Image (tube, rainbow, N blue to C red):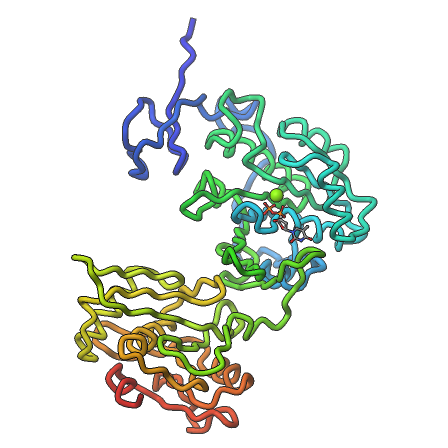
Length: 452
Ligand code: TYD
Ligand code: MG
């Protein structure tokens, strides 16, 4: 009799190892191997991929580019991140912290999609809870199909007969397949049940939305295995105390990435913020030291955000560098550039940098704002209130241009800012920027510091 084999699956990357080890040989994660059944081979495929529909090689030029039909979701901000709406047969993974509003927005979306056959599969809440939420949201979606089920085989057999155009699985971590013995939420379960759902979506043309939980490190639990399988990955972000919610596309086979959709959580669910440009500013009555306004451009839309820094004498051997918003290593690099090319040493100071409002600014265009905020706090000298800045800083102390300079300047002028410090290559060619905005073009960090 053949011994039943077990394998060890890494719950970080999903790789399978024949033996247990302290470290995954594939991704290098420590203590991440757990025992599981070998990945199930779908029935009929045990002998490899034979038979089925015949494939043939075709020439690129012969392929008719069909229009990708898109169904608008009824929420314009969500459409923006999806790249114009849901594509039939596409699979969207939406991740975010618990309580951030994933279930809420999906219920709102299903309700807004009137006339579309929707199926909401919940593995976390009872149907009564979903009903209560729908009441609270005041949505009328009497025709929406609801299913409280966690077994993927049963979900699929019901979905076959229901034949929805849009199916939501809330959440993929609660779904399990009977074919495997491991617990729901383990990597082998996630991979197998997600693969079955994706196959269903592709073969029937159902648009599928999977809700995914996020781990402490901020990645979707069972991370890469899921992100590879789907067409679009969306992240829900927010600062704990803020009522604003930002949805960001980090992968999109049908649209642009880094596009943002902005919502506000209210008593009646999530409301779209159509013009979010200045909502992340804290608006001090007078200029304060350590605060700089920058124009960031996430996706295709410029937004004004406030970068704050606190520089304080350190009592530690290794002074602290804490960055919330920009990346930590980038902050260390910028402080080194400030030292070498600006002549300001912060080596015995703790430096904290934050972007107000819980929005994450990952683009290098924030560099100039970070350096000026740190310097302003260090010298305890406020920068002018009506000033905006943006620009990337290079290791040689040069200020590099950033994409969308003119858009950013126009946005700043629209909100009444009077002065801007920008990379020389981003300054308008004609020498005249938007009405009422005085533009200072700088080539090097030292020029920016001299100007102030
Ligand atoms: P939920 O959608 O359940 O979060 P997730 O599915 O991401 O875990 O969001 C629940 C939170 O939103 C909860 O803290 C209450 C709040 N909320 C409102 O403020 N207003 C509302 O209308 C609703 C439905 C929820
Ligand atoms: Mg939920």
